[in-house]
Image (spheres, rainbow, N blue to C red):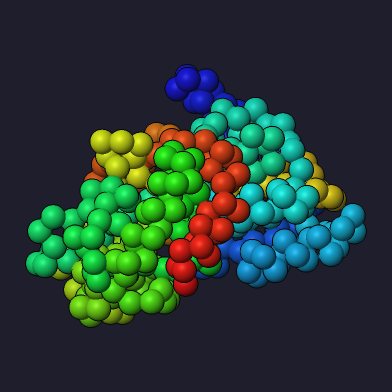
Length: 338
């Protein structure tokens, strides 16, 4: 496998190098809001001569726009965050299946759509954080968050948050709907406050003393290692973390990925861009520029994310998880998770 991947990585580099004089453009609809992605775009343009035209916005708005534009849509690529949104785009009919030997070899199968309509390019682990001074026995699994021992201690985001939707969908996939519903009921009972804010706010809740346990994606904490994050970096040493379920399925991984638009006018260029995102160069930049885990195995980690330590990730097929996202939302509504 390593040999085949290495050969295809070389083939990808050769393809990019020989197309430096290429002409054309690619139209990117992106809900990734990170300034560090600018390097991805400029490097691709310089290497291929293909100009990237961007429209940025919230994922649901971009998907709705692509639906409204229909066959006349100029979109070539949709780039977004989380499996739930990628699944939503597929269900909305705004993506198409593609064949790419490079993507098939570089991106692990469990990080791909079953019909090759989307591919993952970077990952974030969903981690349990805790106040080291006050929590002697932190939760070791996601299911432990529902233990009555943690009543009134937990900060976590709302049920409309895609990260939580995908996490609950993964619990459904692994343990079934009954266990998932009991878990959601238990977490609601253990909340220190009504869900509010983003992932960084859950970490700040520990710093402020509003809660002693929180759930957040790895890159929000890793970012506070790499640079100053107000209300977090100065107090970071008080926070410990657990990669959950290490003796079971492993830590849940949220995904950032993309696919080729259903009516892409520049389809070939779109595939070239996705293949570039799977290159070592781009994968390293996802980690260095935005504190994410590469999707491609064997790519080195940035110091900020490496500082969190080694762990076992959940390698469940995310296409299977995506199927359970509607059921996850029903459970959230049923248990009163705001």
